[in-house]
Length: 108
Length: 114
Image 1 (spheres, each protein chain N blue to C red):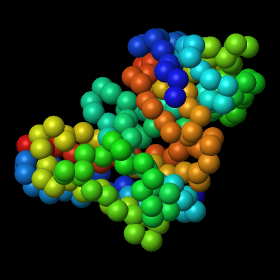
Image 2 (tube, rainbow over the protein chains, first blue to last red; image 1 turned 30 degrees about the vertical axis):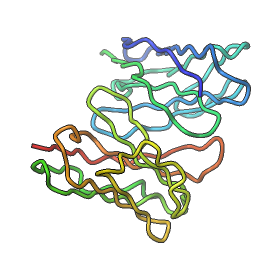
Image 3 (tube, chains in turn purple, yellow; image 1 turned 90 degrees about the vertical axis):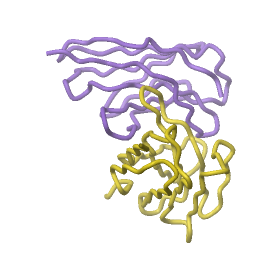
């Protein structure tokens, strides 16, 4: 499975959009991009996944570049409850290999 | 719908003692995972079950760790004997299975070995 690179931390103002980047330059054609998040003292929570096309659900939007070498997770209106570690994972088998993720701090 | 249930939530033991963790997956989920999460790190897969068969246990330290999933539903992860370095959070997850599998995680068991 391809490796991913994420910034270790980001801040976002409450009510604003949070844009979390992820680089996955070695992604192969059959690998999906997954995003999970982990709020303190809880288990990871699935957010969204995609292959080529942009995806949107009730939690977030996933924008994947045309060459698929990077992606951005967008939380359209961040709240304090979105403060968490966000993991970007690339996998073609469903097996999740977690990196250290991005710690998103949403500030009032 | 009930999520993944794990117990206990917290466990404190002395080194060399045995310990066991229990997981009840989401109803109908055939695939079950155990992960280990050290402080400040992402979860690491220990073992994956498809029904009652362990299909990926390559990361399970088999000298002291064991797992079982009798009848393809509940699962137990055991450590015997525990070492100081086993202090971590043990997470259970389940999924329906398949290539684009969404995993649903339980709250984890935080183990402290003294």
